[in-house]
Length: 152
Image 1 (cartoon, rainbow, N blue to C red):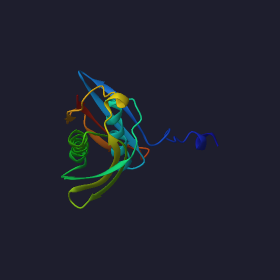
Image 2 (cartoon, helix red, strand yellow):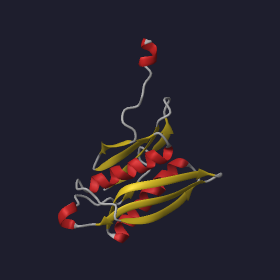
Image 3 (cartoon, helix red, strand yellow):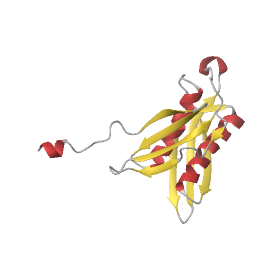
């Protein structure tokens, strides 16, 4: 019985966190699927910009494709950065769908609202996702991890 209880069940999925990297900051998304990990990393990116709640009032479609899952992850985060900058929005919810047909394809919806400088009090501007400390992997327990460093 003790062996059965010691089987690792990953704590609180999905989740995200940040990690320090020189003058920049890293995002790490964790999920039961690769899509979950991508969504969580995008939430981590929003949390760098503001501590305030972001209401999911408006939906934005995002699509990208890449030759492998690591490049797709960077492209995904950069597509979110682009939408944040051009629409002057912050996002609080993401729904990602992935397909691998030789190339990786991502279709997503992002929900958020227009930045309110007083309420959101943005602290930094994310310039883009980088290939630094980039990885997208499934660990031995089947949990997906996606991370990279953001240029801020």
